[in-house]
Image (cartoon, rainbow, N blue to C red; front, side, top):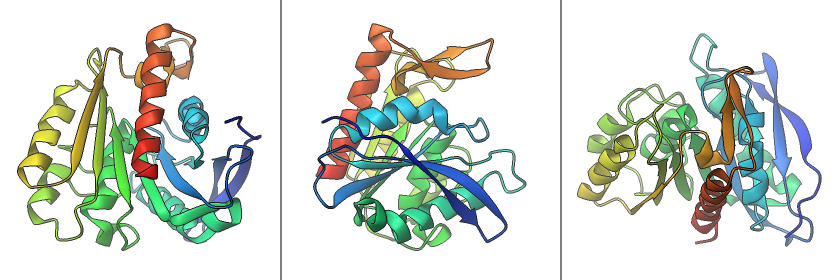
Length: 243
């Protein structure tokens, strides 16, 4: 499905400051598509790093919202993350998306943040999403969205057991893939619906990018392994949204 031009808007954090948010929507999509909120990783305001993945995900017939957020904010980015979640809940319909069919996904530092919305919705916007996707994540540290540790939250999670998809590159040296394997085992042990997918790529390749040391961030790539892995990541996000 061809992609329409990306629309960039602003969302507000507690009325104090605005952040940019890109909306990817395919041309010819039905009136109300599922919605995907996709969070980038640690680099402040680096939504561009997941733009290729967002476009590929939208090609499956989804509306994908990609906000900037600042990990260097005093609260680690929590206000930005929760504000972007509220924005999508409240405004998805204006972009032709159904907020009632929302998947929250995130890469790297965004992964734990996405998972946190399922384990501790009381610490985000009070409502669990339809599914969550963690891409190349680390789940033994506080999630930026909640301030709590996903592995610790599992024991006391009282809400609905939201479907979880974990995706990781086996060649990842930034966050090794055993972190997703270990978390997958913990989720399974507690009866959560969870799927783990591993790909032969690295931390950047799993989102269809390559790390550029001169720039200090990830950039789109045409490398075969990264394209294959990133397209599979997009397919898995779409499958979670369309389930």
